[in-house]
Amino acid sequence: MDESRFLLDLLLILLAARLLAEVATRLKSPAVIVELLAGVVLGPSLLGWMTPDTTLHLLAEIGIILLLFEVGLETDVRSLARTGGQSVLVAVAGFVLPFLFGFGVAHDLLGLDLLPSLFVGGTLTATSIGITVRVLADLKRQASREGQVVLGAAVLDDVMGVVLLALLYEFSTGGGISLVNTGKVLLFVILFFVLAAPAAKIISVVIKRFDAVSEVPGLVPTTIVALVLFFAWLAHAVGAPQLLGGFAAGLALSRRFFLPFGSALHEDPVFALRVEKEMKPIVHLFTPIFFVMVGLSLNLREIDWSSGFIWLFSGALLVAAVLGKLLGALIVREPWPARWIIGTAMIPRGEVGLIFAELGRSSGILDGQAQAGLVLVIALTTLCPPFVMKWLYRRHGQLLNATTI
Image: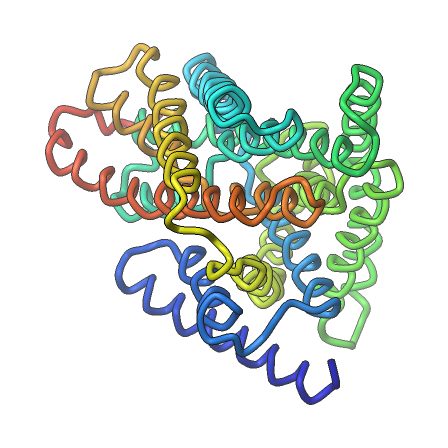
């Protein structure tokens, strides 16, 4: 691609993603879905104005690393601690059941091979904490009992999901499915997270001291981005996906994460808030590129929509995706309206589900049919639950205890 063409494509990606996101936000819908739609419209599925190239893929990779950094930065394990066993039960059940249901549908019902089936199951484990938090905040219920259970469960779900993603990445890059490879990845992940906190503490102290004497603007975001990229490189060096490095860097710098994670910035919450504030524009510049690229990578014209496979695949996975999350919430000791709200709040897959689906596609594990089916499921499970949650609160809001924990 020549330089002028690249600049034009990047302009189209950023403007289309931003304009559609504005429309979605005003309609109270998740922006991630319309960013995906922008890629579908611009790509071979509809207009055919652009196709993914190496440079755009690299920008998308930076976007997903920064997105996982933001997820880690906003992770609040205190929410998990406050709700204790209830959140753990919802998270574990909402992680294991969709994985088993999705794997069973793909492997036993549809006859997919072992590794693609693992990717399908892994995709269904995801919960988009960003969408869930946004809906609860809009309804002013994030401090309620059920809101805290959801937030705590979503935090744990994120951590387990990233670990599972690291395992699937190892399996897909030639390591094979074995106990040895599983143990190796888990060991590397544990060591990586343990070492991330002291490394971030040392580096953040250096950043703060240089920032105090520097007369050049932009020191904090520049050095934090460099830190995130270093962690991403380090994660790849130990055999984990680069995006795990972004997540670990976010956890290590989070002002909400207790020891050992987040020890770097607990001593100076003002500086922690400054890091969050100055990094958000950079994160929000790059992350739409990733979601648009997911849409660009889809060629819906190549999908045989008359085939029963795509509809059976999508329909069966949609049922598995919804039931897996709902059943995990229905077994907790809460009033029935709260159980339904908790289960519904855990359903959105959003950006996390797309990360799984795109990794499966880019590694050659998932074909176009399977990826398209997964994207349909992710879109439906992301779009519908916010509206269902609002309806449930309108109907049962007076029966729920809104006191904070």
